[in-house]
Length: 81
Image (tube, rainbow, N blue to C red; front, top):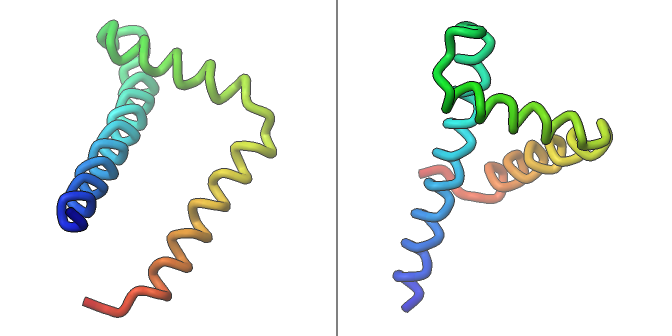
């Protein structure tokens, strides 16, 4: 049962990372292509931009710092492979 939960967690984080990479890729392609971008790319970019603009600046910065600190602490606590 523990092995199943570990696998499920790994798959879940892989899906989350893939979704974030897709959003970032759409933002970058929208910047590069401009108005020539596909409707999917421009829609994702508009939604992500609107979401980030509605957040107060301190919240976004705080979330980024928390993720960086978590990654740093996790890398220091785990033994090298």
